[in-house]
Amino acid sequence: MTPLETCIVKGDAKGAKECQMVLQHVPAPETPDIKLIFNPEGLSNAELDKLAGLATPSALEKLHQALDTHEKKLADMQQQHKTGRNALVNAQKKRIAFIQELITKSGQCQQKQESN
Image (cartoon, rainbow, N blue to C red; front, side, top):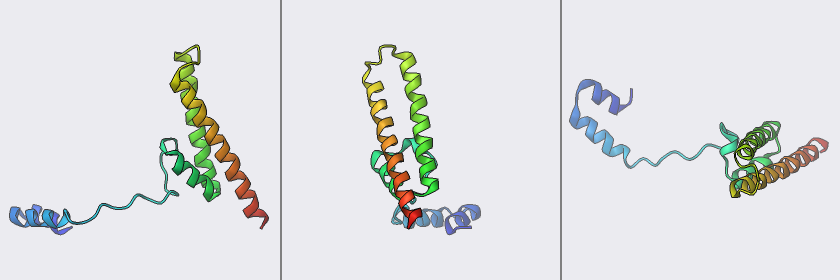
């Protein structure tokens, strides 16, 4: 157990308070490496670009997952907005095109790595 947990279990309120004060000065953990992504469709454009630059099979798979999710969102949006002239629909189309470009870029990088 951590010192804080030990103080709490023993009922030492003063010790628990002191441990909490010490923990306030501990910096927050850094964000995980871009390779550890659990929600690829929620990534920013910069993060997606970084992922494409890795040019690994797992990075390419994550890009495909993001593309699939955004294509499904677009289909749902188009059902709701039949004219297709909605700003959200247009933004979604641009996002899909961007991800498709990144997949192409990543695939080309991966081929270069394999040929070397």
